[in-house]
Image (tube, rainbow, N blue to C red; front, side):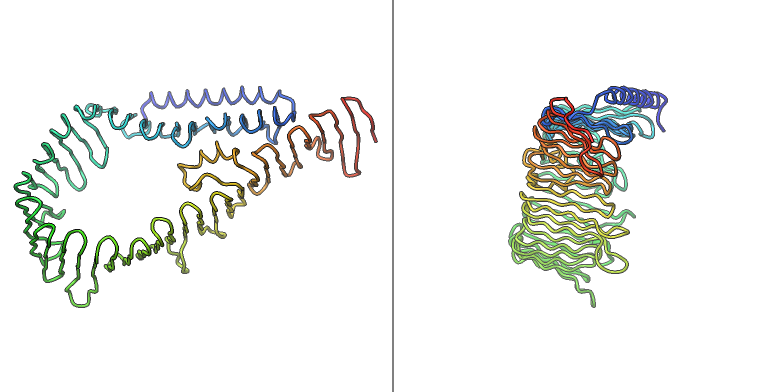
Length: 492
C-alpha cells in the first residue's frame, strides 16, 4: 500500500502534468498552419493535436490531448502521456523514465538509479555508480545500505544475494541468501570460507589444503558430500542426485573423474574436454557425451536433447522449444510456445547482424517483422500497423534497448520509410525531409522549398510552391483559385 506522502506526491505530479499539457495545447492551438519546410512546419491534426517540425527532422514537437513529445535529434527525445514519461539521450546509453510504480534512470554502463513508490511498506530507492558506489534506502529500519568498492560496505538485492558485506575486498566477504531457507557464506581472501544455514550448511574450505562441499535437499536429506585435498586435485565423496541410489565419486584433477551408482555412470578425462555420462536404469535412455568439449556434444535427458558440432551446427530441443544454430553465433533459428493445434506460436530467425525475421501468432493471424541490415526493414501487425523503410542501419532494431537509436538517428540514413496505424498512412523520403500522408481528413504533401499541399476544407485542397510564393486551390471540379505573391490571379 502506498503511503499518504507517496499518494500526495503522485497526485501533485499528475496535476502538474495536466496543467503543462493544457498550457501547451493552448499555446500550440494558437499557431497558424504553415509549411516552410525545412525551416518550419506547423500542422493541426484532428482532435486538437498539433505537430511542429523545425530545421527538417532535427526539432520535432507533438502536442495532443493524450500526451506530448519533443525531440532534438539526434541528441535527445522526451515522451509523456500523462501517466508514463520517458527521456532518451545519447541513445542507447542514457534513459530516464517514470511509471505508475516508480522511476528509473541510467547512463549505461556506469550509472543506474531507481525508485519504487508502490512497495508494500512505502518508497524505496537504489543508486549505482559501477563498480565503485552502491547505495539505497527503504521505508523500514535497516533497509538502507552503502558500499564503496573495494574499501568496505554493504549491498542489497544485487547479483542474486540478499545482502553482501565486504571489508577491503577480497580480504573479507559475507553474503546472505534466502532461496529456500536463509544461508550465510563467509570468505577470507577467497581461500578460506564457510557456510552457515541453508542447503549448503557445513560447507567450508581452507585452500589449497582442503575443501568440503555439502548440498542438501529441501527436506534435509543429503544431495552431495564431496571432499577435495589438496584442492583442486584429488576429490572423493558421495552424490545422491535426489534419488535413493547414491554414487561414489573419485577424481584426480584434471586427469580423470569417475562416478557411478545403480542409476548412472559419469566420467571425465582431461577436464573439461572429455566427458561421458549415461543412465544405467533399464529403459531410461539418458546420456551425455563431450568428445571433446566444447566442439562435440550429444546428450539426451528428460528435459530435452542436445547435439553440437561447434561452431558449425547446434540443436537444442525441449517440449516447449526447438533451437538450431549454424556457424555459431551468426545463424540461429528458434521456435517456441507450441500451439494446441500444432506448430509453434513464435519463431525467430537470425543471421547476425545481416538478417532478422520473427513471427508471432496472434488471434487473427501473424505479426511479422524482418530486417535485412543495413538495407531495409519491415514490420506488419494484424492490428494494421506497418513500418517499412530503407536504409536500416540500426542492427537489432527489434530489441527494446535499441529502439531509441532508431527513433533518434534513423533520419540520418532514411531514403524511404512508410508507416501506418491502419488509418493514417505516412511515407517519408530523403532523410525525413519529404513526406506524403494519407488519412480520412485528406492528403498532405511537403517537399522542401518546392511544394506543399494540405486539405483546407473537406472539399478543397490547398497547394503552394516556393514557400507560398504561388498558391492555388483545387476541388472535385479542378482548379478553384490561384494567387502569386499574395495577389489573386484567377478565381473560378
